[in-house]
Length: 268
Length: 313
Ligand SMILES: Nc1ncnc2c1ncn2[C@@H]1O[C@H](COP(=O)(O)OP(=O)(O)OP(=O)(O)O)[C@@H](O)[C@H]1O
Ligand SMILES: [Mg+2]
Image (cartoon, rainbow over all chains, first blue to last red; front, side):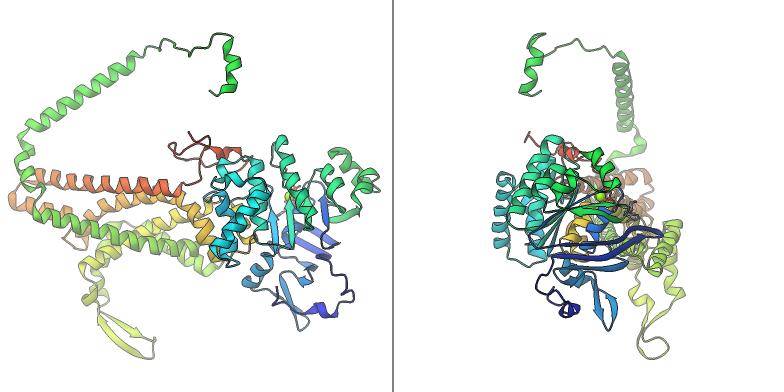
C-alpha cells in the first residue's frame, strides 16, 4: 500500500480517516447495473453489518472493496488509498496486478462456502499466504498459525484436512487463514449461511471476539441478533442502493422505509 | 453402526442380523461356464503347436528384444514429456483471454487431433525432404547459421516429435478439463489472500487439477507405450514391435514373437499402472468422504475409497 501516495493529501478531513469510504460506487455486469451509487463510510474498529435481499448487490460490493471486481463508477478508498486504480494526471489508471495484490493482502475475506484449500491441512491453509505473500519465515508463520488456531478453538485440528472438519470448524479455519495476513479490515460474506443451524453460534462467537479486539469488519449477514449485538452500524441495501442506514438497534426496532420493513418482517 | 444406534437396536435383540443369503444360481452357472471356457482355451494354447512355445521362451529374454523394449520406453517417456510441455502450454493458451493465443491453441488441437497419428508420423519422416535446411537468424535480414535438417531430425527424433505433438493435443484438453474442474472459489480465496497469478496457479489450482488430470493422463501414457509400435511409419525401426517382427521375419515364425512383444508391453504397462496408482494417491490428499459436509459444494466424485475416513477408521 505504501506505493500509493496521491490524492489523499488534498482531502479535507485528514484527521478522521475512515477505513473504508465508498463514494457513489457503481458496478455493472454487461448492461445490468448491480450497484447504483453506494456511498458509505466505515470507521476504524467499527463493525458494519450489511443486510438486504438476495441479489441486492451485497456480495458484489464486498468484492469491489478488495478489487475482486473493478468498480465502474465512483470512488472506493480503503485506509485512504484508492482501490484498484491510481490517479495520475487527472486520470484513473488501472492498477498493475502486483499492486492490486498488495492492496488485497491487507484485507481479509471470509466466504459463504469457506473456500478452504482442500489439499492442505488446516495449518497449511493458514500459513500458505504468510509464507508466499508476506515472505514470513516458515517458523514464525507456523507459530503464528498455531496461535490463531488456538484462538478459534481448533488447536487440536492443525493436521486435519478441510474435508475432515465440520462446516463450523472449516469456517473458523477460514477466519484464521484471513487473520494470518494481519489484515486491517475483514470482510465477511454471509459467513454462516452455509452452516447447519447448530454450528452458526461457534462462528459468530469467533467473529464477536474478533470485533472485541478492535478489528474493522464489514459483515454481510442475515443474523439480525449478531447485527444488533455486535454491529456498530447497519446498512440496508436493496437493488444496488443504500435504502437505510443507522444504529442497528434502532433500525431493527423501528425501520423507516417500506422496503426495510418488508425485508425485516421476512428475516426476523 | 455407532454406539448411539444401540438404543434403537435393543428392542428386537442386540445381535447382528444373520439372514439367509438369497440364492443366486445364475451367477454360479455363468462363472462355471466362463471358467471352463478359459481352461479349454489355456489347454488349447499350451498344446497347440502353432504357438511354438519353445521359440517364445528362447526369444523372451533375447538381447535385441530387451534392447528394443528399452528404446520403446525411451520413445514413450520422451514423447509424453513433449506432450506434457506442449499440452500445458496450449491449455494455458486456450484458457487465456487473448483471442490470438487461444485461437492458435485451438488450431493446433484441431489439426493434431483431427488427423491420424500414423499419417503425422509419415509426415515427420518426410520433413527432411520438405525442408532441407533450417536457417537461424533474423528473418529476411541476418543469417547466423544454417543447419541441414537431416543432421538433427533423425528418425528417432522425428518419431518422438511426431508422437509427442500428436499426444500434446489430447493432453491439452485433459489439462484444460482438469483446470476447469477446480471450483472458482479456490482461485478467488487465493487471490483475496494477495497471491499472484502464478502462486494461485501453482499452489492452489494445479495441485487440485492434478487429481482430475492424472487418471486420464496415466491412460494416455499407457496408450502411448502401445502407439510407439507405429513408428515404422517414420520409418524408425528400433522399437519393440518392429524389432520382434524383424526377428520373426528371419525365423519365419511371427506368432511366438508377437507373444514375446505382447508380454513385454504387458509387463511395462503393469509397472506404469503401479506408478499411476501411487500418483493418484499422492494427489488425492485431503479428499475424503467428509467433503459432503459442505452444503451444496462441489463434491468430489471420484474420491478413492481407500482413503481414511474422518473418524480415523
Ligand atoms: N460475475 C457476474 N456476472 C454477471 N452478473 C453477476 C455477477 N455477479 C453477480 N451478478 C449479479 O449481480 C446481482 C447482485 O449479485 P450479488 O451476489 O452481489 O447479490 P447478493 O446481495 O450478494 O445476493 P445473495 O444474498 O443472494 O448473496 C445478481 O443479480 C447477480 O446475478
Ligand atoms: Mg451474496
